[in-house]
Image 1 (cartoon, helix red, strand yellow):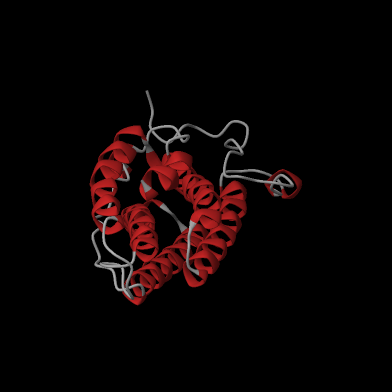
Image 2 (tube, one colour):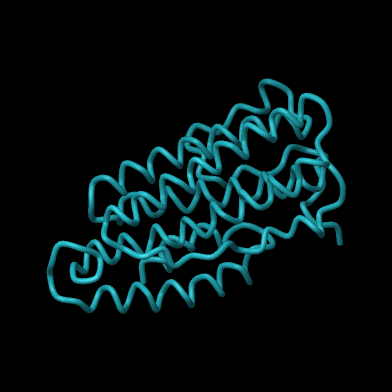
Length: 206
């Protein structure tokens, strides 16, 4: 159930329906199993911590997919864009590490595997940047949806911090996709739904 709420935002983004469905099926089973335990101190016996651990596992799968996407896409980025891509990859790895630590702090097990980022289908540099933009937007939407539903304070704070990080990444990617300075500014309440800059291609060509 926790992952169902978390992945609601992810399902809004084009091209991720199948990934979300597979991830949802696995994490929902984990959330249900953890939530059935009696009250206790860890995720295996405390339903609230179990819910949070399952939700963070869904987030971890999403971040691992982003790490994989940036690693595969780096060769497509020349010059200064390559340096930008390396920095985004480094931050995504930090997100993976933070989520892993948070899940273990709840007494939970690491259950998540990476989703399929679809880099092999992206057409060239612009296609990869568009894919990265969609991944970042999906992550922002998911964290905004998850943050108020988490029970424990540390995961709530982490979700809010990660949402802010992904929002900043979207600004950088808008610039990389050709948006001017003014057009790269997010909407006042950007929920991860701001479309690609005008003229930018879809992540995967038809």
